Image (tube, rainbow, N blue to C red):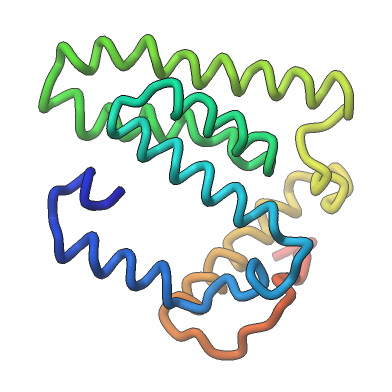
Length: 171
C-alpha cells in the first residue's frame, strides 16, 4: 500500500518491516478472542489496496467484510476520501471527480451498517457501555492511551496481553 501511495521502495520496505516485526499489538496474535482485529486489518488493507488498483467491486466487498469483522471499520470511507483528496485531486482532477461517486458508495455502506447496528442493538459498539455514557471520561482518558501507545511504538518494553488503561475521571 505504501508503495502504491508514494512510489518509494525504501519507505514501503521499512513500513512493511516495522508493521511485521514490531511487537506493539501482541495481544492480537496471542489471544484468540482478538481475531476480529486480525480480520479487520486484513479486509481493510485488502479494500484499500483494491481501491488503489481501482478494483471497485473487490474494494466494496472487502469493506463489507471489514465491517462485519469489527465496528471500527466505519472510518474507512473517511480514510479513502482523505487519500483521494490528498493524492488524486492534484495529480488527476478528472479521476478525482470520478472517484467521488465511488467514495459515496463507501459512505452509503457505512450508513446502512450504522443504521442496522442502532436498529437491532441500540448502539454502534459493545464498548460504549465501558464509559457509562459520560464522554468527558473518554476525552480525559484518550490522550493518556495515545501517549502510552506512542511510548510502546518507540520503546516496546513491558508489553502485556491486556491493553487495559486507567479510566480517568478528572484532571
